Amino acid sequence: MTSKTLAVTLIALFGFLGAVTTFSKLSAQDAAEATAKPAEPSGRLPTYYGEIVTQDQRLKIYEIQSGYSTKIDQLKAEIEKLETAMKKDMEAVLTKPQLERLKELAQEDELRRQKNEAAKRAAEKAAAANDS
Image (cartoon, rainbow, N blue to C red; front, top):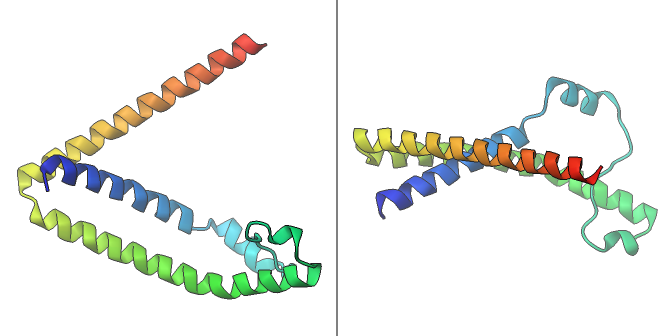
């Protein structure tokens, strides 16, 4: 694997880990709200189910989803641990100059991403100004 391919792979992995970490953590307020009110089970029905199920079936499906969600969350946490360990092991293969270059590449990518987002926001703002 070339160093460029490895760098791109690691950068993608860093982004994925960040997204998983951000997505998987509830704020203290969200957690308190979730435990405070024993509301009716809710969830999201799979595609087309909403058109064919009764209210009773809907509630049963929500209960099924709820029962699996704890196990799924545990597995996601395990995946996060494994991905962190994998990243550490992959970095152990690299030399110090490679690790430094990897850090530089990640910083360059972050700057590029920020510039692209700023340009996109500016274009959206200009388009909105033109529409009014």
